[in-house]
Length: 309
Image 1 (tube, one colour):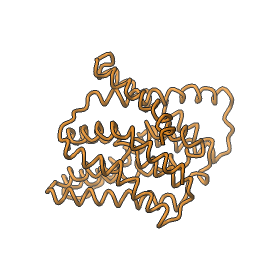
Image 2 (tube, rainbow, N blue to C red):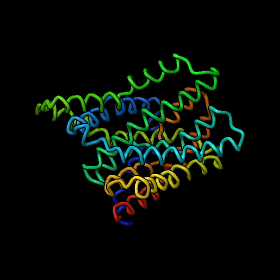
Image 3 (tube, one colour):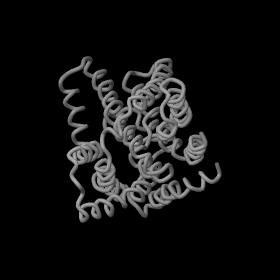
């Protein structure tokens, strides 16, 4: 356990360094926004394309893995939604809290950290988790919020979802990578070197950007943040583990990867959605801050457990 903690510590230390830079205004909010754009559109996209182009879709797709992650995530989504309805939340607020309960920072934190800690074979399951989060649950929240405000489903909602997926650089990078792999086109050495250099900036850049963005987050509504953090860091990996081992009998290594991914703290893009739709940005901000701080310990515990299974 302590050995795993020491291995995860450098990742969280980079987040801490970014947090310090943001709090001291050494990195302004504008600088953080541009660093995030660089990582999101360039460095992380290069890393994901390089990973995907080196794999075939058959290497990544696993029916049992998809079923286990979907089942575990949907179960926790349902728990968070039920608690929200008991608190008399409206549909939009409830959807936002449920999103906090199940959407982890897989892109910026999970991809670089889990592939380094669990080995290069982890990239397939991690990419699968990222794709499910982006395609299924990011679409679901748009449907729930927009549908509740319009009172019905419309072509505008479907168009919004479609354009969001098409414009997401992570989805585009993974899609193009699998097409490249499917066509069996070798990656030329200069292109490979370019992707390696640019993709190499993803890990430190993403972690620093996470920390710097946390510096702007408030710690209001701590009771709600504590509940959502419990859902994300404890319930989510627990129910994904139950689904993977007890219900769908997933390969132990792959199961360990998706359980570790489920243990990641609340993703920063949930706050972007909360701001865009003006739905509970303070509670989402607090959930991201609290879950990230506590995940320093909980992620280490989960990774230590799955590597021992």
